[in-house]
Image 1 (cartoon, rainbow, N blue to C red):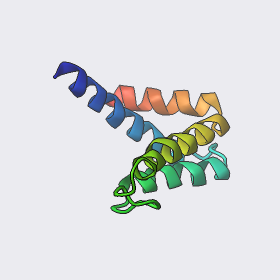
Image 2: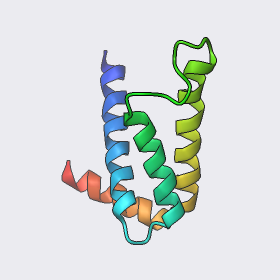
Image 3: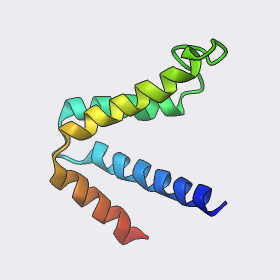
Image 4: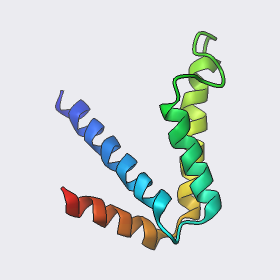
Length: 92
């Protein structure tokens, strides 16, 4: 149960960091769009490919969201991400 709680806390922290990165003035606009799409896709109550379709229905969640986040994070300068992480850590 401790591993699950720790993973949930890390996800919560990462979402907070991404939210700060979205609003940071030095985040490129394309990275903002990609990260916004990824966060929006996670939070929307529907999928592009319904989950009742075997394999592909769940595969879109496992491929689309991480791919969008990965692309966005590659575009955001490391200094911006470090600043956002430090900001979140200081609030704890």
